[in-house]
Image (cartoon, rainbow, N blue to C red; front, side):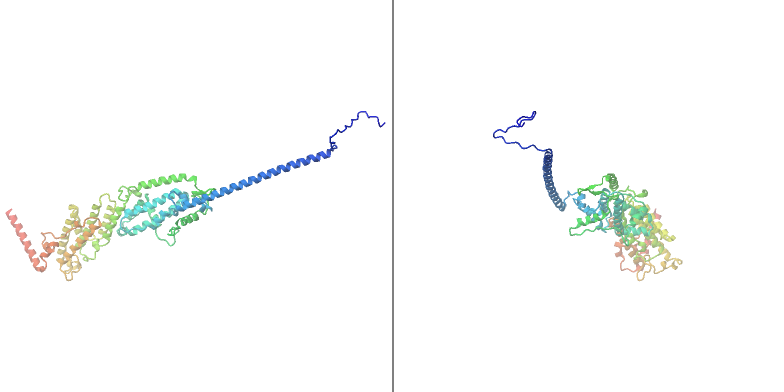
Length: 546
């Protein structure tokens, strides 16, 4: 049955000419393996693409970093060049800490006085001139102090501000103490010797106010000036710049040392992530307070130097200006030296009459000092009080006070120092002569025959010579006094006895000395008596005729 076709069987196609026979059919397992291979191939190709993209991105990032680094290095170089030129356009921050903040990598910034290098140097180097111009010197100190104080108030706050102000006050206390020990030494000594404690305190408070612009109490003044006294060891670190161009780095090193403690209260400047210096935003309130304080100080100082007479210090007391103090110091120098006639080397006599007369002359000097200074001079009353205190020490005997009272009364009535000293001398000398003739008074050494009016012992000179020499000394001393208060020396006095005095012709100095030069005392006395007789006869004649 081989030739019989099976029912339903598909006929086998017969290949045509030129037709390739098809591959035998693939099994299911082979098809699955082929699919897996295709997927692996696709994944491999995708991974290769991602690797290539990552490589490109890494290369681009590297290239960008190199460009940024190069640009940053160029910026640093330009900033360094700008910093080296040190132009006026540089900010204070870049001047103190470097433009890129490279000095502050280990901590926040702590501002110190040394950063204001020029001002701080000038204050440390300041010394009293010794020329007596108190007002000018206080102006110089005030300018330096206030500029540094303003810097402290601008760049610090809290405890750090208090520390820097304390350092500044210590330096100022030293400078003002030096000023008092040089240009005000005579005045301070005079006030101490006469027990003027309150005035001494006022002087210290006054020069403090003229420098700082703020008032200070007597107790606070004592504490302040105590800072200026030399101590065995001081915690004040003076910044003394060198002359070899290292000033800036020296100041910055000091600043870095103060900034090594990290962030604490008072740190105003901080280093940012970009190596820049920025200000603490919480500082704004403190800065405004400092500006107000400086404004108040400057207003208080607006009338200093020449004399703001209405300026006051703590307790409602009137402040002494620089010119007031300078004038008082010159007068005190006169009184402490040759101007103290009560302790003058050229006057050795201690009779009551000469002591009373010299005390009166000294008192008149005090009155004339006050009159020539003007009513607005705040030192008038303290100086007069000191002079009176010195004079009162000698007014312990009736005879002394009698001459003192007579002479000062003449000055009060006439206002003429010439007349007061001339009439006072005549009165004192007359009383002296009367005592020399008194037996009881002669028991005292001051009224012995060989005792003179100005000299305790005449030795080989006459009493007239002693009197003439004493009057010349008083004339010269008065010229020195006028010079000490700034008055014209030509306004000096010329002492002579009154013409109607029986001994006036004998004792009159100046142009009349040549009249009786070379004559004996007895002859001159006879002539004086004759003149006195003629005067008496003339007066009697006028009475009879009238």
